[in-house]
Each structure stands twice: as structure tokens, then as C-alpha cells.
Length: 156
Image 1 (cartoon, rainbow, N blue to C red):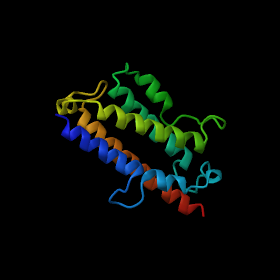
Image 2: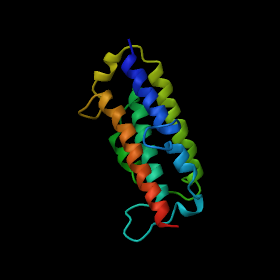
Image 3: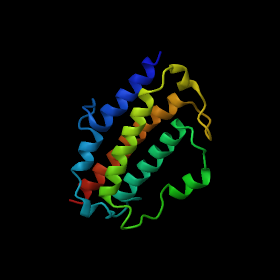
């Protein structure tokens, strides 16, 4: 039975594009951002909005790759996380498309897993299981979206 996996998939979908308890969905909040401001960084900020979006994409890709049992390459993860963004490739628009597609794939893959026992499997390259990883995905996305919204308000 996969009741818990379905619950997690539903929670991810709700946070990303549904009606989460905390207010607007992440995609709704991110769509309100003016792309021309996403590369700007207010004084004292560690990252700009675009860097935060691509950071979220890096970790969502890591999670999708773990679900799909792709070989883990810690060097590739380190290179992609907080990478130098290429202006033509790493646009806000491309990041938004990637964000939506990655999360749709994660939800789709989860819906196909038949047994909640899978959640107890250890994640390759980590000291935790898939239940912890998937709950972390939601927490990570909410956390960084909050940062993006705050940076956006600071730049008005």
C-alpha cells in the first residue's frame, strides 16, 4: 500500500501549485516576481532571487535523480549548487519552467511507487531515508521562496 507516499505527493503538489495552508502556492508567488529584478541583490543579501531559484532546482533535480535511482555524483552536485549563472541559460523564465517540470516529474514518479516501505530506504549518498528527503524538499522550497519574496519586497 502507498497511502503515505500518495499523501507526500499530494502535499508537494499542493505547496507547489495548489492551495497550501500558509497562503499562495510557490508557483503563484514566484510568478508575481518581475524577471528584470531577479538578478539584483539588495545590500546585505547573500544571494539574488535568480540564484535562489536555480539552487532550488539543483536540489529538486538531486531528489528526482535519487527517486529514479540515477548514479549519484557528489562532484556534479557541488558544481551545480550555487553555480555561476550563465545569463542566456539561467534566466528567471527558464528557471521557472525547470522548477515546474522537475516537481511535476517528482510527483508523477511518487504516484507510481506501490509500497510505503520505499520511504524507509536509505537515499544514496546520504544518511537518511526517502521520507526525510521528500519532507525536506517541501521545507526547502518554502524556505527559499520566503527569501525570494522578501528580496522582491526589498527591491521595490
